[in-house]
Image (cartoon, rainbow, N blue to C red; front, top):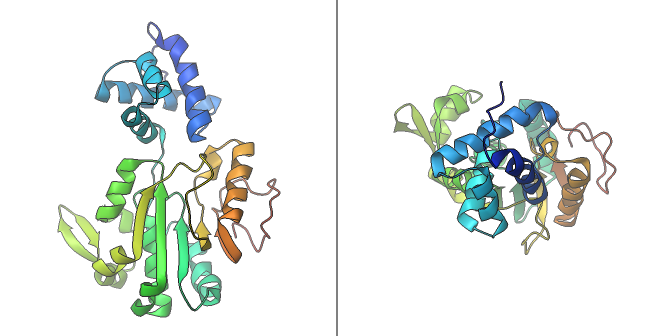
Length: 265
């Protein structure tokens, strides 16, 4: 992708804005992703006005609206239900049967539009029965406020449901028009969504989690931030809790207090 031309103060503001994004969101764009970063900032400026210098000035001044919009602009939110089916198969066969009998707290730590949190709820209901959803507290968090609102609505295009069997789609969704489907009320009642910046710690949790899904986000962080987030997850977990990452994420060189069980678990 050719890089957009830099005009005026943008040539000086863009590197500073990129540094601000890395420091405050933990998102690092590599050299070969620079064109992607420039394209996203250009799209932000077209939608909201101004240039890179004015965006930088607003976020440095603590403008919350500008900060939220920038978070949405630089985030990657590709997702779908039951992404990495192998991990959900292991969840069903090995993790869910070992979770406590009482209240179970689950955290989808990079929830995007909620596909993962609702996939977790479906897994619980199919393994333990829909009655079990009443004792599961599933929290989904994301950097983007727009994605949090989308997760709360629970309405998805059919392409994001591609890995669901036809009977699962009939059981857990209802048609919402325009080729879209809405998660049913049982699943929505089991899931809560909030905005959270994983790099801004300590996190505001009052209780610890029994299961944490931290997937498809760590590769956006620098190694030091990656380890910091994984260690913070340990502190947010109950003794004996499970951490599930992604099969594609760089964990082999990461030494933490977690005990490896198998790849990504």
